[in-house]
Amino acid sequence: MPADQKYYLDSRFDQYTGWYNGKAIRTKAQYLRMRTVAVVGGAIVPVLVNVPWHYIKIATTSISLLVVVLLSLESVYHYREQWKNYRSTEQFLAHQKVYFLNRVGLYEGLSDDRAFKLFVDRVETAIASENAATLNTMTLAAEAANKDVPTSRMPE
Figure 1 (cartoon, one colour):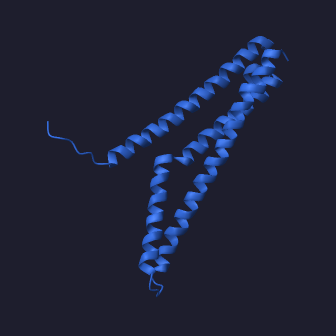
Figure 2 (figure 1 turned 120 degrees about the vertical axis):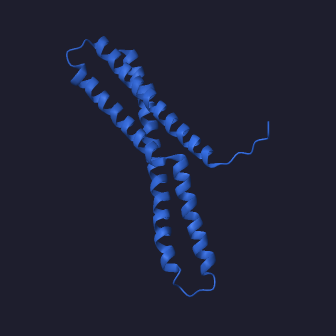
Figure 3 (figure 1 turned 30 degrees about the vertical axis):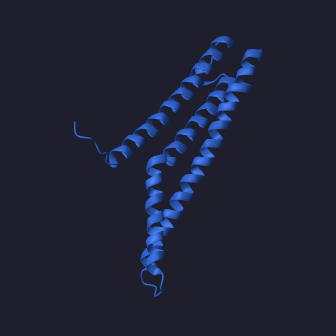
């Protein structure tokens, strides 16, 4: 393998696949933690309402508030969508590497130079697409959040 190809694979490609893998793991874990607490909290409140305890109103109100906050934060951060974007991009990149190294699929029958150029093009396009998808998700979330916040305006 030529030095420029090895450098690209070892530096940029491996850096991005590692980053996407790490982000997918973290965002999946965050999503599952938040959803688990929200589901358990939502399920436990109706049960607690029937418990004769002096602080039950405080407990049920606090748990309900926690559930609402967690669900609201999920609508802001979109951990599920991010996790899916990161994982699908990481998987796509890994498949491209296998196809490229084994000269199958789109890389079959191409010269080393042409196959490498196609590989780089597909990798960089996937990275750019994922960046755009994440930016779009976060921008739409911010716009939706801003619509929910009333703004006061001075009379003109």
